[in-house]
Image 1 (cartoon, rainbow, N blue to C red):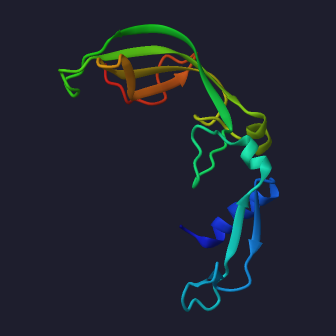
Image 2: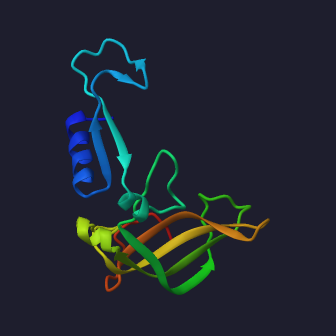
Length: 162
């Protein structure tokens, strides 16, 4: 779990934002089960609020994790889509190199939280990705990629070898 004090700060900030409620339990029990001899331990019940449930990404949330998007990323243009060959990748699979632009925009909740986007800022950026074709269902899966500033000649990351 890491540093318990830092985790508690995180929880208190989430409570302040109205995302969770925190209720201290009176002893070292939960539903009548004793956790052992942990003198001095503190126990809390934490629950999602209706606000958090309304902000959640239903597709990526489950019973254990609630995921709240701070921004949204959308592909704007595709400027190149070509076959990609690299001796380090399987020679029996089909790969493509796709290049284009994407826009990363904060959600209203992300703005209120001071979100900084997936690359440390929001805006329009360029990308290049290598994707692998699954010939049985005609879908592609992400292999690796790079991003860069739209007006720069180079890339911020260097994951793709040309």
